[in-house]
Length: 391
Ligand code: NCD
Ligand code: ZN
Ligand code: ZN
Ligand code: ZN
Image 1 (tube, helix red, strand yellow):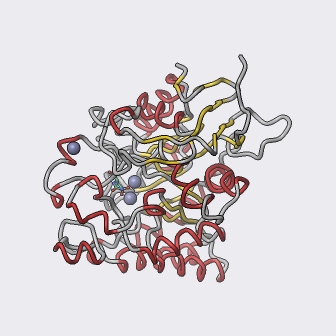
Image 2: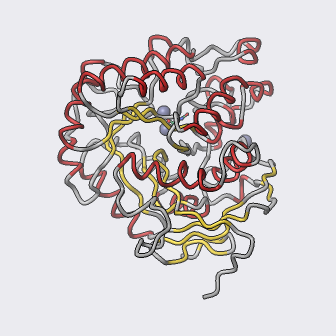
């Protein structure tokens, strides 16, 4: 097969530390098969499937299913994320060792969707995780600081009367868990960093020698709270869209390496859960198929990152954080061919119904971007060519 690559950028296959694939439980919104197609189209060769499925991925039965089904589909490696606790809001640590030693070899645990709320549970999870050599990823929302059911804050949300998830809800958990990681001699990873204050806390913690890493989503790099003006629930997400000053701090933090990587927080929801009143809608948005285009627009076109930097934040650094040995490697002789080709001058317009995800609502619908993934290879096999999935 001839792959046409003139004028394109060759990158190591992308690694997403934060994907919701909804299997088991909500296969009407995404399955491992549809989500794998979305991942491959987005240039990903590995995704980490979050644990807030139904039932929750708090046992090896579920985590092994996720890994096996991903291998059967064969488009991306779907690494299961195990729940930290039994049930997402549980008081009891899940059997992390069993999940870590299963077929799915769970490398990361998270209660994403719910904060690991109890500081003693978090401390024990961190201690246990460093003994097991796995990572704890924290959703970072102090629920007692989240006012009301609608998780938005900012000038537009305030004017429209949408109750908030204040910055302090995120930042107090980032600070708490940095200190807990220090005391436990463990590593912690912060999911979907969304505020300028979180970037400052990351700088402080790194300065103290604390082993803490963080990710930022494409939507928090691009969209601000003014999007809420229309009350359109496609913009409802956890953590909420914030302000231009937060966006600037997150972009700079990613450029400087204070924020380690981009993770999509791809969170598909059914039309009926997104078309209702804003406050009743489920939080979350699609991310896999648009991530590279948004990173190109917000980081490359602005001069904050070169393509070498894109390789770092989309592939190498996330693989390193989670200890993946066969992905996210610099392109070198003898490495498995997990590769992504990007056309940096390909203008395209997002059509949400045409995305591979089953869920079809997206805040990026009808937006035009200037760069696009054309080709993805997983261990040498073309999973996407000419922007089409190769089953
Ligand atoms: C996520 C979901 O829908 O599962 N929603 C979201 O708004 N990000 C959960 C999460 O990542 O917190
Ligand atoms: Zn979350
Ligand atoms: Zn999430
Ligand atoms: Zn709709």
